[in-house]
Image (tube, rainbow, N blue to C red; front, side, top):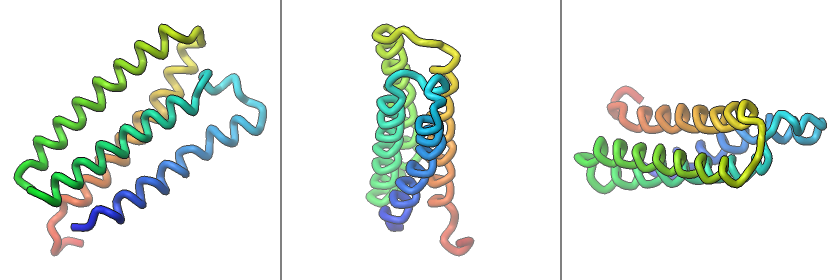
Length: 128
């Protein structure tokens, strides 16, 4: 199994995921974006990239630890996101509904794509 194709597909997905906020920003609808939106975007995208790369690395080294690595990385990702949310909300006064929509837009789509890539790598080689 190669690590490079899933990582390149994730990076292209991150670019596609950034397009709607860029369009909102340049069309003047910045009220639909949370303050420091790009901090949230790059934190969650970077965290997802690290989780994806580490799980793929563990799968390449020893497939027996794949499930444990997936569960451990997902737990670390959720805890890091919770800590980030608490610190972000303490530092910024903002519309909580806009923040919630922006955060879950990034978090859920990153998580769905991460699970898709990881499940695709788990398929039996004869089924590809």
